Image 1 (tube, one colour):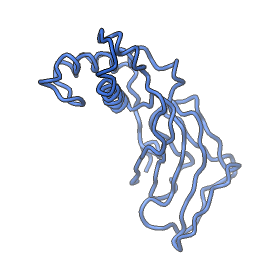
Image 2 (cartoon, rainbow, N blue to C red; image 1 turned 30 degrees about the vertical axis):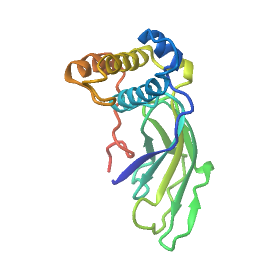
Image 3 (cartoon, rainbow, N blue to C red; image 1 turned 180 degrees about the vertical axis):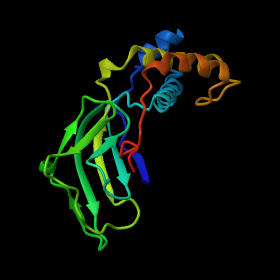
Length: 200
């Protein structure tokens, strides 16, 4: 099944605060604050992408080409916090919202999932082309619950970029640095089988 994921609402905070990064870098003053903030964002994005997780709560939208043949939709970027709703667009362009009473949301598993309730079924309708089924959800840890290994990996990246600003662009990760960072992150890497759990 074709699908896409996009971030609808960006994080309002980062898992590493500016002051924490400056202490790690042994930086005083505020002349380099903008650079450090950019480096924190780039490091967080690198680590999240490697682990397949969301560190800070924010809203995502999962687009599907159709409803699954099975009874579940699995959501990427754990941990799942909540599902705002499921909408779908008919062939004539009409947008509908799936009745929340038809499904339940499982937030305690990884990946989080939406399951049809007993006796319920996905709409048997003709959908618009593209990705007409849209699932909006919130995923991420509480700001004080981000795994410590992830925080350490972010600080490691920011520190390496800061020390090698002339040779290494922010966002690029040399092989030796990648090995050290990924060693920290590998244990908690999330496996995402796709929206249908690999079933179709």
